[in-house]
Image (tube, rainbow, N blue to C red):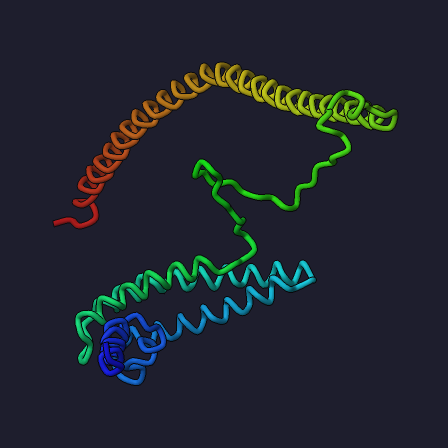
Length: 264
């Protein structure tokens, strides 16, 4: 194979795999109407910034500052993961000047971007390694076991001291006292409620008795009112009859005196 054939073959291979070049995809149609390229560039920049911040947090000696930086990194990761569905939709949008292979490569870029985002250290992930059987186990480097004990955890290593016994007795005493106080307060509250219910019961009983006494009196008042109404009606009838008789008598007297006052 000649040098010219070798160069030609290398160019063909490079052209075939240009669609997987991240920098080329990021620079492609950035100033045009390609929304995918613009959003991908923004996500890529934020991802690089998050990676730099994670490296800074890993070397930070102040624990509070490192925790704050890791929290900000987790927020950035969550925000970037929320942008992935939009990127996935834009990846299938047809853009003028892009071939079918380049459109398919955009979907692969989005998938790789998700893995890159999830791989950013944020202080909450733990390193895992595969065992011989293929299972995963978590390594906790912060746990230290005293090798001097030789794995012996008999009672001689866990004997209670006088101070611990005194503390336990004081704790039990205070807990018992607190429980008894709570029971006393609860009993007092129940006594107050019972007294209130007894008072309400007595008031209701007194009201019932008073109503029972008032019923005959109200019946008597109703009878008297009915009688007074009947007497008033009879009086009105007699008064009307008397007034009618008086008018008739007066008219009769007037007619009798007319010949004397006006003789013919």
